[in-house]
Length: 411
Image 1: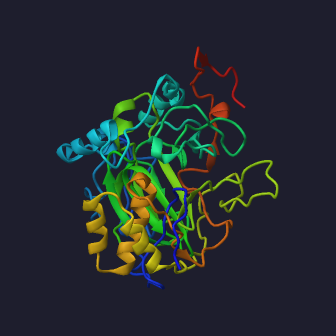
Image 2: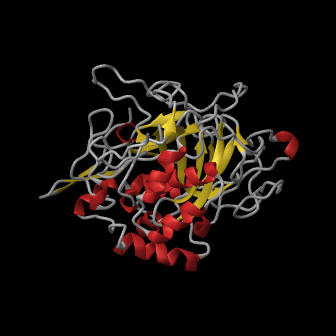
C-alpha cells in the first residue's frame, strides 16, 4: 500500500506496467549560436550531424520539423534565452520572483554572485568552449540542499559537491555543463521522451527522458528541442540544441554561462550521477566512465530502453495531496495512467511545495548503476573540464568580503 513519507522527494509514475510508446527517429543537429554552422543531407546524418568546419557561413538544410522552429535555422539570442513568445513567459517571471500561495519565491543575496564567471561566460556566449572540445562543469549537485519549503535558493550558504568542495549552490539538484549556445545535446542512454516543455521560471526549455526501471534524466535551459513526446531515442541521439532559456539566463546574461542543467532521478528522486568521494560504503557512479563522463562513442550499440513500472495507487495519493486545486484537477483529469504519472513525476520534482505527500511511486526501481554518457556528441565534445583547470574567472563570496580569483596557470 502506498504511504506518505514525512520529507519531500520526487515521485514516480502511472499504471502498474505501462507500455513504451513511439518509435526511434533521427534528428539532425544544427548550428552554434549565430556562428557558421554546418551543411549536411539526410544521408549524412543518421543520428547526429557532423559540424562543417570548412565552409564559412554555411547553413544546414532543413530536413525535419521540431516542436519550436525548423531545424535549418540558426539559434538566435532570443531563442537561446527562451523568450519566444514573450507574453507567455511574463506570468512565469512573476511566479519566480514573487511566488504564489503554493510556490515560495526564489531566494538570492550577495552570495549568489559566487556562481558568476564573467570571463568564461562571455567567451561561451561568443561561441568558444572554455577548453577545446570540453564541456565546463559550471555547477554540481548540492548534497546539503536547503528545504524546498524555503523556496528555490541560489544563495551559497550550505554547499557540498561530490568532491567535498563547494562548486554548487543551495538548491542545486543537477549538474551544469557549460557549452556554447547551439551545441547539440544528446540522450545519455536509450529512453522514451515523456515531456517537452518551456517552464520559464524553472529551467526554460527541457526534454525529459524515461530510461526504464525508475531512472529519468532531464536536460534544461535548451534553445531548441528536436524531439516529441512519445518518441524513443537511442543512446547518443541528438535531442536538442543547447542555450540558456529561462529566467536566470535572462537575468544573468551575459555574466553567467550558457549551459545544460542536467537532472538525474533514481526511483523518481533527484540524485547526483557522480559518485561521492570518501563515502563508506563506496558509492556507484551513474556515469559509464565513472566520474569522468564521456560522450557516446561512434558505433556504440544502443540497447532498447527497459520499461518502468509504476504504482497507480501511489500516483493517485500524490495527486490527492496537491495543494493547488487547479493543478490537482488537471492531473486527475488525465485519462491515460502513464501520462498522469509522468505529469505527477514532473510536478513533484519541479514544484515540490505544491504537494503535501511524496510517496515512492516507482515499482522495481534499479539501484545506482553505470548507465549514462555525457549529453553531447563525440564529434563535438571529448569530455569535461572543471573551472580550476580551465582557467575560468571565478568570484567567491563570504558573508563579510568578496574575493576575486584569477587562476595563474592552466593545468
